[in-house]
Image (cartoon, rainbow, N blue to C red; front, side, top):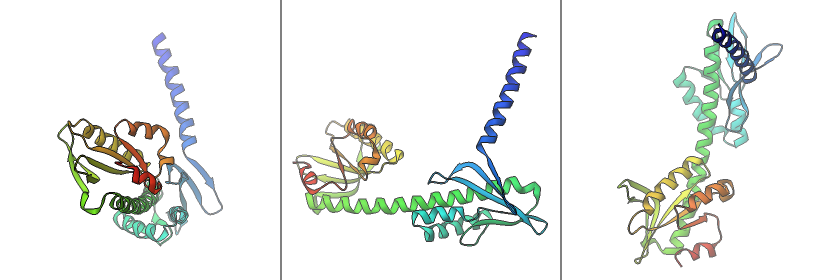
Length: 256
């Protein structure tokens, strides 16, 4: 009996806590003509994804009220968002009118599915837009890095997008290798994104175990955003760390 009593109390408490969590995760704002449902997922900028429902010709209209487009405008990338959103809408059988994702008519029993579908579409479009912007910034940084390496070592000594095998025999691609005769230097452009940092650390750690390991230079796109802890981590696998925007004397000092 004692064990049954404990289980009953525990289940009751669990039910109450789960209800409280559900209410805190989803917020509903009621207007005169529509209800806004804030979902427990976020846009890249940190704002919650909201989906709107309103009566429409005896059924329901579900839409994002252009919130995804507004997020893209804040990034300065609305045209990119519109191209991506059109593709997502087409593949998901949703409508998109250059500002908002929508389903024109849906019966009440399909409302939960459509709210999720619209929210996911708007969020996916903004995430892909942010990724496109990041790719553009990374490409700009890579061009600057290559320009500085060429100026420092000369084009003949550089191999771009070069392959190098680590101690584990796994083959890696690095952004550039400078062959200085007496030694080689491997360069990798690293963004503040944790995936970029982890991949570079794994790559350089394996390469560092080689009997004749090349020097390993981490080129940071944004040292401040990378953070002190991640820079310390990268320092365990590299021989030098430099910012892509560091001044010329620091670049000239490489391999001095």
